[in-house]
Image 1 (cartoon, rainbow, N blue to C red):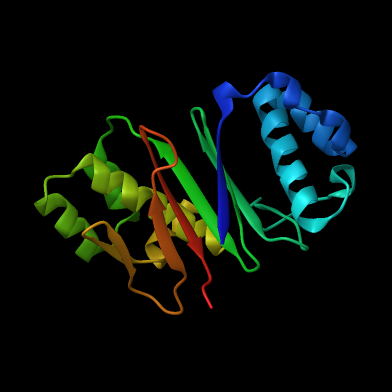
Image 2 (tube, one colour):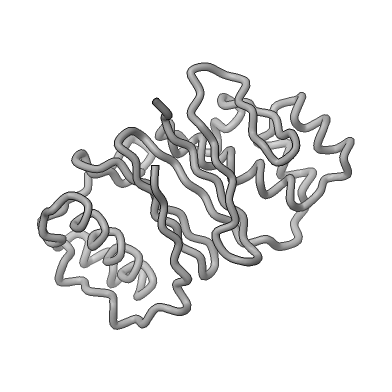
Length: 192
């Protein structure tokens, strides 16, 4: 498993190269703007480097939940504010990054934490670091499975001493990380 982190704000917009995109993706770039074009350019260039194929020949398919896929090289991406993370593995992979900011942690936690995890979270005082670690882990788990956060409770886990412990099997490995100062991240991948 491998992941790359970019500070989008530090990258020149001139890196975006929509000539690498198929027509339908060029249309999306026009609708979604320069940031989308930059992210998709970086993704195509990295897939090209890893697979030895020209970037303009890379065509994505999309899973049932809209997750972009490339059969030759499993990948996942996440971005929040100025942070972008591209994750790669030879098997399914899911990644999430989030900018740390004040939120109504207890209300959001009820939507994705299993009862055991939620109880511990509330007892420990709804700490921001724990919330974001768990949120990123939940998002990475559902993306690993090709699912959505609406089904996060189908992937129960607990948080203990900075570690995520899955309560289901077979479970992917979870790695928590700090992609940039002021951000939290998690990647879920099938380990061998």
